[in-house]
Structures are given as structure tokens and as C-alpha cells.
Length: 444
Image (cartoon, rainbow, N blue to C red; front, side, top):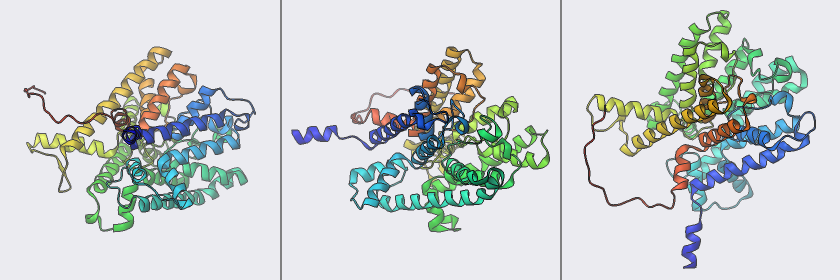
């Protein structure tokens, strides 16, 4: 009986992931409260430190205080560490320490690692984790080294830290910047809107970080033999390409007042960054209503599974469209790239869509009601939070504590994943084997 009781108390992988993220958020907040973390050397109120820590661990980028001017080098270092942990995933980071110490990883720990990086199977998970860590640090270092000459030219020796900070922030799809001292508070990368090096490197880091760890493995293993790629990788490449090119064409016409060089770079950058990086090289409040609506849609979609990005995920969108196409063509099951998609996956995709739309809508209405902010601005902010993007129309610093709590909840749910929260909550429930009587209902 005692053995059974211990077995029942054991946490599931989903619960471990949630508690791991929550613990890192709390520890990060405690460090950010310290006087050494602020530029002026004073204590930061707990809720402000908690908001910043949540945003960093959930790789979002929404801030109450400008990162470049409010926080000291120590505080910025804490934020950068939280971004790195959040981007890789708490479980992946913990597993890396276990690997370095030579400890054996149990089957339960391997199962947790599998859920954390959305791997299809437990077998080979330790080797995959090692590959992820090496590839991550390599990409971040390459990005920093390429951007370093530009930042050093403009900022002197501090350009080294600027290069590494923005490289890690971009690769982890975090959107935090420390350009406030030179470009003005909350300026993001607007002062580098015409820099080809900064624009291209940041965009590539965002895309590489957002396509997913399993896609990296496919590229590494199969090189240019695309036919041998997993269906998931093919779907990710296709959807990612569409979601970059089509919005970029619209933004090219929407930014018509800019010179051609800035216009091309700006249209591409504004197309890439909403999924889910949070940098901007253009004043987002100047976008047209349609442009803002497109950004909201891109923020909700987000990146790909098992990546540093958040959002509903590109594969969720693809499954929903494939399901709709199968209905229109009167096929029994959806399919993509010559492979059939399970009905259970379609159900999961539908649940995720409903969950994100509900969170995004209710959060916006609650913030608008609490602070009297126009609903369109609230929709932009909540889409940014639940999609873990970090783009803002400038209302976050002026919101009340209640609204900040709403945004924190949305960021946390957006990072750990809605289904993870649900599966963690109902982990003790067993699936019902019996079926209720069926009755027809008309839809559409």
C-alpha cells in the first residue's frame, strides 16, 4: 500500500515542466528585486520583478521598465540567463547539468525531456538533448560574432555585450533589447532599421530558433535530401515560408513612405518578428489597421513545436487547414505530403485554437475593462503575451497591477503550452472506456 501511495504522488512530466518554469520565474524575480540588479541601486517592487522574470523565462519581451536603462549590467545578465533557460526549456537545461555531472538519467526523466522538446519518442532523447545544446550555443556565438563589428563601431567595447545579448535574445525568440541608452527607451532595433547585417542576422536567428529542434536534426542528418525529412519538418518549412513571404508583400506596400532599402528590410523584418521574437525596426503604432491585424494573427500562430518560439504553432495551423480541405474534398481523413494525419491530432489542434482564441479575447476584454484602454490595443497586447512575442503598442508600462497579472498568466500559459497545463491538471483522471449514446447534431 505504501508503494502504491508513493507511486500516486509521483509528478507527471507535464506537472514537472510547469513547476520547473514556475520555480525559475520565482528565483529570477527574487534576484531582480535586489538593489544590485537596478541601475540606480534601489529595490524593485516584487510584482515588477516578477513580471520581468516571467517575460524573460517565457521568452516574451513585454516589459514594465526599459531593459537598457532601468537594469544594471548584473540585472541584464540575470535577464539574459533567464532568457537562455526559457528558450532551451527548463527541463533541457536541467538535463544538461545531469549529463555534465555524469549522472544516469531515469526513464521518467527521459519521458519529461521528451515532452519538453516535443520529441516523437523517448529513444535517443539524451543524444538529441546534447545536439540541441551544442547547436544552440554555436548559432548564438556565430550571430554575436557577425554583429559584433557593427555594435563595437557604434558603442565601443560595450558592443561585445550588446552583440551577445541580442544574439541570444533573437535565437531564443525573446525580443528583449538593451538599446535604450542610445536609441531611446523602448526603441528596440529602430536605430538599426537600415543595417543589412543586423536585420539579416536577427531575422535568421529568429527563424532558426523558431523552426524547432527536431527540424534541426532533420537538416543535420539528411542535409539536402528533403524527401527523407519527417512530414513535420516539411510542413514547418512550407508554413514558415508562406507566413514570411505573404505578410512581407503586404508590409512592403504598407511601409510605402520609407526609402526602398528600409522598405525591403522593414517589410521582411516586420513579417518575421511577430512569430515570436518581439523586436521591431519600425514604429508599430504607425502601421495601418490591417497591418496590426496581420501582426495579431502572426503572433497567435507563433513558431514551431519543440522550438524556442511560442504561439499555437505552425503545425497546428497546417493541421486545421488540412482538416478543412479534407472536409471540402469529402475525404475521410486529412493528409499532408502523402501522409495521413490522425484524428486525435486534429482534435488537439482544434482544442489549441479554441484555447488561444479564448485566452487572447478574454484577456483583452479584462484589461480594457480594468484600465479603460481601447480594445484594439488590448487585443494586440494579449496576442503578444499569449504568443510569447513581446511586441507592444506602448501600453504595458502604464497598465495596473491587475492587468500585469493577466499578462503574466497569458505569458506563462503561452510558454508552457495550453495542453501541457490541461494534461497536468487532469493527470489523475483515466480515460473513459465506455461510450455515451450518439445523436446527430447539425453544424455549418
